[in-house]
Length: 142
Image (cartoon, rainbow, N blue to C red):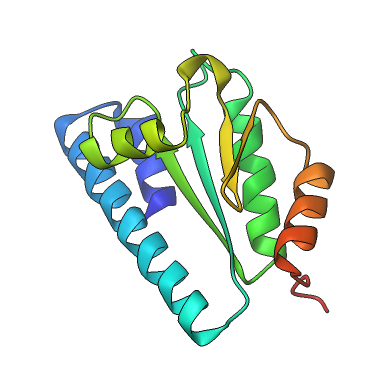
């Protein structure tokens, strides 16, 4: 759904339908994050979570590159869950997360990994090292 929304934004623009679907998708991601995190804790399963806050390339030249880095990591690590949220979306649940983690629009892209907030672009090597250390993940090829 996320990739279809991305396609819709690029090809259809910011229509009312695309905006509605983006808000709905953001709510689904938050619900999935909370439920999956709870399941992981109760069942003692390996899971890693990254919350990714971004905005359009007009306001954040590195946000798209960070998205590519996160996609590559998600493909490499099955237990890694990446949840992406548009900073500028008009949705109270996302705004609450921005306040909780003190995310500012001037410090995008922003990542929350293991409750730590990282701002600015992070390389694949830096993030891979961090998730391996924090979450003891193994890549899918292992």
